[in-house]
Image (cartoon, rainbow over all chains, first blue to last red; front, side):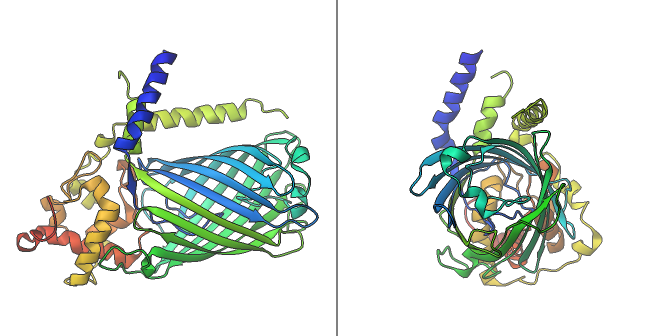
Length: 295
Length: 146
């Protein structure tokens, strides 16, 4: 039984290069905020992101993560994250994984489009990708050495309500967030992320081109913590304003760059992020072969 | 740190959902007849006209967009594949531009077609301008392979 499954997995892996092809992606520039657009069903998007963070009273760091984003259906996208970081003059560590799921409850587009987001995180406190800022997360939390930080491990469930709207080429997105560390004595933590973006041109040009304005999407994100159930509000929280741009290349690659500026003394002064992603179609059919009954 | 049962139950639930979705035959997700989908289009949306109708540049841009976003499911010639139906069928060719725009914007989410509202509105109209040419045999010959 196990041998048969292993054999099937190997067959799927071996058939990937011939059955999976690059697909053109139309990505938003957001790195923290989510809009309501899910992955196309059957497509796999592989993404690499980096965050360079400045650190007062400690060493600057370079955190990175890989995402595997799969469109399981047109109303459900599931993602696996693998996180790591290098703290300069310290060490490089693997910090854990996240499993994220986004569900679209409504069939059609509405005035505001909700998406339900549920994520399980199994990460150490050395994780510095800062994919979201929660509760009372502040810059000083990351100042300790990796040896100290990696000793504490967090198992968390994170819930977001993604509210998003497209209007005349603009996207507006609001993501309230609640996180629960599964340790019983930990409080619920709250946070927010807001985003606004627009392609530089709304009409497509007649020919494939790399530097056309329609391939660029510019935007800005605002995100930060809102305290926790024991101490809600803005006291001892950090906040960031981050202009961002995405460049969707005709070859199927997307490049994203974002500069996040800390808005108060609890925030990192700079979070410079960049990412590279590529979408592949046909992955779902290959995967279907693995799960098909009787084969 | 205690992990307890909730995360395990949560992950087991998601895994069973994953397995159910992946075991669904991709080709059968699009079994709904185009007529049934068109019947759901609201009257106000049905009456919308294509602001780019007859614009030759929109046809060329629409062809490019179709090949980039639609052809992987509907085929390069819009004849349909296992993943998506033919767009050359009479019901769709006789549908109003507003009906096609509504389907493109909202998708047929439960049947596997995503909502394409992430494309700006003018780009959706460019795709429709291109697709409408399939209903005109005199022009369809210049639109690429069937």
